[in-house]
Image 1: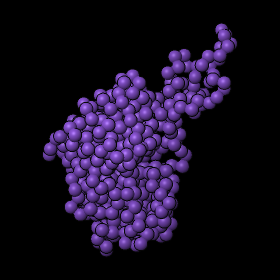
Image 2: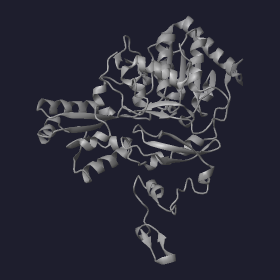
Image 3: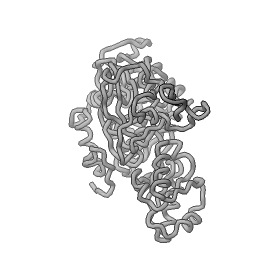
Image 4: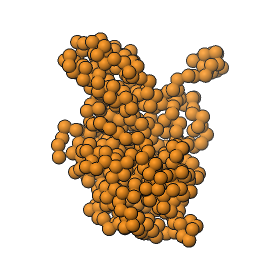
Length: 459
């Protein structure tokens, strides 16, 4: 609000109280004269000093489009990049102000390998050779079941596809994942409602608080649907009785159902109840993590091959992999990405395996215990695609250059496969690998330009 008059006019909050909104960063962004600024960006750079790159916010699975504004090798700020199908030009404060995480100084800057009990800096070629050699030794001594692969929700679609291919097709292990717990009964039917389609529904049912806590900008889409388009938005407990809800929604032309992934069965039960009474319904399942949906679609899960084809011999999920490492049945572990450090049992598991191959951007548990360590890239340094919670395939581009001259994570995975005697068939670059994805998962064909995966296509 404006206080005082004329040349004494000030921008202030009512009675000096702080703003409580999760979206207050948008106020500074839409300020027409630049009088309002962001504390985390103010005086850090002049706009003409910045290099702007279109990308995707890395903080959650909603897939808000952003510009990465960078100066030299530092991300200076995130700015919203309007995509009416996803974010409607908004960013939540959690995502907008998450960029300092990408500027951490504790980077892994050189390849390292454990030699004579001590880790030493080695060349990139030697690091990859030693990693491949160590995996081949475990494979020969203990078989493929003694090896596991862990990705993360910060890997791109191309990386996720290569990790699962490297595990299943090259090494022959079924033990791979991008999360701690198994995903049982997942299918594209749990993702039929698009974000923008919320506005087309006569009624939208949100089960529990988790969807809006996980993906905050969803709240703004629901607010728009309710207040501007006069759609009925019902926020219900996640254990609400599906039959009673179905009766309440009888006669609607289209009902949208939004639920967190952990409660997807409740959403599907409500959808089934509505179908029995002849009410059409679509479901939007909210997943945890920037590219969790892409990891699911492309088979970086122990029970599912790319395209949600059941795996012939399901392996251990992420939690099971860590347990197997602790009890000694798992001998080698390959970790790509970041985020696992949040699990309290993760570091103990790393200390128990004989061979730990780490591809990670930051110093942490992986870098401390790796037999072979390779510098990974943050999402702001990668080229490729990610898939948001509704199944929209969007590009990420390198907004900053890494502080080292070593190959990308994607190239490292390709070189590791070559060291294991496998031929990917294409150069391990984002474009060629996406072509492989499109062949393996028909729903991804032609989706590269920001379209939702088309699961009506068959192989």
